[in-house]
Image (cartoon, rainbow, N blue to C red; front, top):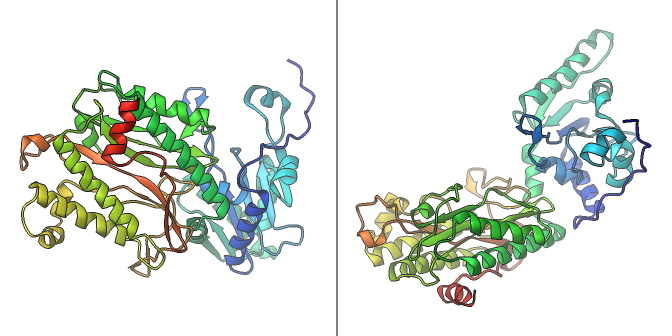
Length: 452
């Protein structure tokens, strides 16, 4: 095949995060860097699935947060105060033959035209150019320990400069992990980010509602997963944010069950934990509902305890409260409910102090949410739980899981697993549930399934 005529640089599709916001992010991050420093942020790489096929490419979240650029084999370099521009990118060159087989590339010219780079070079030239950018800088910021190969490459560049010290070259005196600074920025979501996450929540809510309407005894768990993935893709969210969990019966007591292969039986509950990824941002929702459309007495009793725990957690989310207060509320409500129903015996305060609830509720009430499902950001600051601020987004996901082999409880309770999870943004005066569109109460769930 002869070499193809190179096509003009193609403008990338519009996204919900404007180019100006990526510029603000880079400027904010560079303002946090020490004077005379440089930051080096590599993209993700394509990963082999089997032999000569790859997994669908997913960009590194830190790289994406600062650039919006969604190609592999790139390196972003931020050099505050550089005379010829502070944002330098190394990326794959245009190659008409490879683009014919594998898809369009921006190339250095496209990165400058569409992503705001001041300078861009072929990634194959990085060994010749980057040491010159590092030389004379006092500090190098990069994410240490994520990639042994990239760690070694950074040291190769630094050692090239050290080898020339006798002739006047000035190597950096310090290598610093950039994660903490950048992740603090990512923790507080902008208005544009919240709009994307709100939309991801709406799509995910529709998917869960679709699964509830479709569910019937005799269907397989993976068929519910297929309904969810179909709704995601039809709404423009081509990929889930994480492997979907569809666990019926006792499988609902396995926290990260992903086999999704069992046939569902009337009388069982099915727990679905699934969320879409939209423009890089994750939703993360769990609903538990009866395969036959009606909760049993025991299922309803435990479900309403979990629902009350979630509502108590919602009400503890507001600026000035600390991160752990919603979790503490779920522990209190769940322990009280387990005592009331006879699954635990004793004084509530003593049971909480002893951690007796952990036989039934063994995880925390939630986590940060954003570009990563378990998003970045410290939960403690200076040894104390951090205070909530507007723009933080978290999951709230209490649960009760009565193991099938838990012989401390009556048989009627065994094998029931329930989790209810929603995505919540901290607002100036409280909270906003971003996934409000999917039924939550017993009556709402049963009504939706009956209308199927």
